[in-house]
Image 1 (cartoon, rainbow over the protein chains, first blue to last red):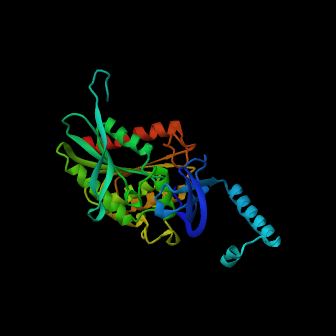
Image 2 (tube, chains in turn red, cyan):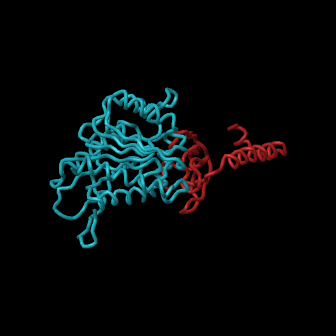
Image 3 (cartoon, rainbow over the protein chains, first blue to last red):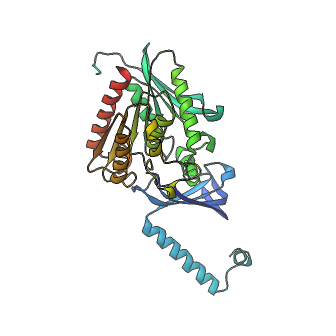
Amino acid sequence: MCTMIAKQVDIDGSGKGKDGWFEVRQLNVSYDHPYNMPLEHALNVDFVNEAEGPGARVAVELTLEAARRLVQTINEVLAQAEAGGYVEERIKAQG
Amino acid sequence: MYQTNMYEGMSAETVTMQGAKGDKINAYFAKPLGDGPFPGMVVIHHAPGWDEWYRECTRKFAHHGYMAISPNLYFRDGHGTPEDVGAKVRAAGGVADDQVLGDLEGALRFLRSQPNLNGKVGVFGTCSGGRHGFLAACRLKGFNAAVECWGGRVVASKEELTQKQPVAPIDYTKDLSCPLIGLFGNDDKSPSPDQVNKHEEELKKQGKNYEFHRYDGAGHGFFYYDRPAYRQEQAVDGWKKILVFLEKHLKA
């Protein structure tokens, strides 16, 4: 059953959808029914721009293990970038 | 029972109907050809969206002699592929129960305005639609039979209630106004077998007319042939039980 476990946060970024690149303004994360993964529930990540309609979406459906690995890998890469002095002021300012 | 020398035909199309608060929304309407009279079915799509499975399901009811309408409960959330729209609603925590009930009441009115309705209307739903179906059978007047397939969160803790879903449907059991059939998979996590027990206990306590069928070897969504949850044997038996139940309450 739909768990209704979902969070939405505002973000800045770009995503490549079916019609090419678009500005990503929201990140939707849910643990609920996936559309494609052969699982009852998955960790679903949607990069969207609500102002551009439901089709402005880059979708990823992950197993729990994959989702945890993604989080860990992003954190490791960001830490490495920060340690190397590569993090731009704009990113630092946003924390 | 269909015989090979019988005429058969149906029409199926997108229509516009009046939903909650008088909003115009679209719906998929399938009906047998012929004079009737025919019973009606309101077909409530599941959380993943107003998708192909639900169009097929609506036509299935028409094939079995029902005028069936499936309202697009996500109409107000924009248009795109059913998946994209469904993902948007998923992120927003679903649709408010009151809005859904307004749309289902509109679908019921739509069927009751058909000149060749036999006067009886049922409601069917799976997943979140199963929950909505039970809710509709409790809170709306005018249904003659209800089919709840694995409605999750009919039994819900206080922590699971939200502004959009402020009351657990089980709390409306005393208002259930028509016979109910429920289908559940014993491997389902939502509703879990324990939650189905609670649902059944409340129906018994309130003296309601119901039948529950629980399937071993099946989890959530065992009718969906396009998902790994599909269970052929249980699905075939489940559909048989639903059609017998509806024939008894809507065609007699």
